[in-house]
Length: 327
Image (cartoon, rainbow, N blue to C red; front, side, top):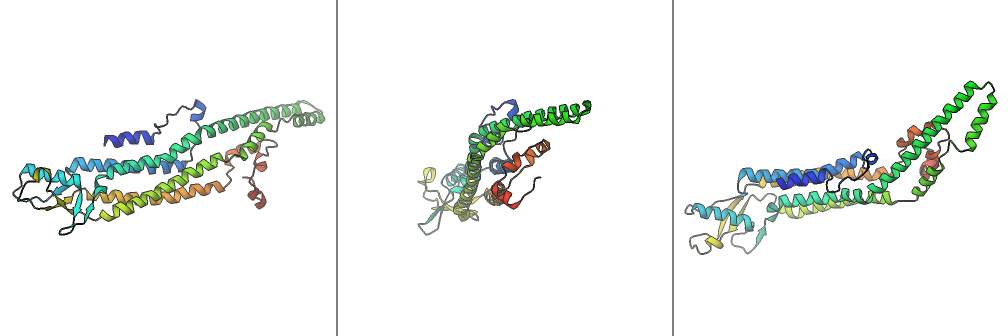
């Protein structure tokens, strides 16, 4: 249980990747809210089930309870429970066939491995995309703020000139001068965005992150279907105890019936995992489809600036053909 709590602290707080960003970068959200929800659920839910499994084990005692013969001593009964839990193999009476029930024993550790695997896409994004994305956003924000402040000061100067000068030609001369000196344009930002328009590394990383999530979810379903489904309803199993302390006992039966006391936790964990990750799949697909839409809300406040034509200049071709208006 302490292991699950420590893992949760590391994975959910991103402590695996210490935040060494500056003060300005800490104010930037470099992850979409829906992506963060998917990460928290995909990583946090298995850790919650790990805590539940360990709590159930500590509170209810041994995970198996064997129906020992009446002549067994307390020591022999305890050894039987321990040996059957260690082997966890179901022997068919009168047959050589046996079935391993190891998924019951490996449940907490498989859930912990699932949480670690589901955190890999977030780690990939944090390592491959966050540094470059943070630098790009800081540069764009700085340039837009500089242009905004410069435009505001220039407009204030033009208004003051218009109010104080009785000659209207003075105002128009000042305006023409400002246009010739490109006060209302953003040449550095335009060149930077034009350069970034030909770069697809961020989109590729985002696609890889979500595709990796889909692959891990598919692998989770394959694991649940292949290993958990076969032992999902098996509460009792026949255990061979002719080993160790009881190997030389002549009155000990070859097989003894045992019951899995933790079957309910196993079933709840399996069903809940299947249901939760089934709900995450549409969210992941929705995140992928968001790449096909052109969101201009980030720059909407700057559309008030004179001659701010970046949105129309860098609008995707398919939206220009469709005549999509500015927001």
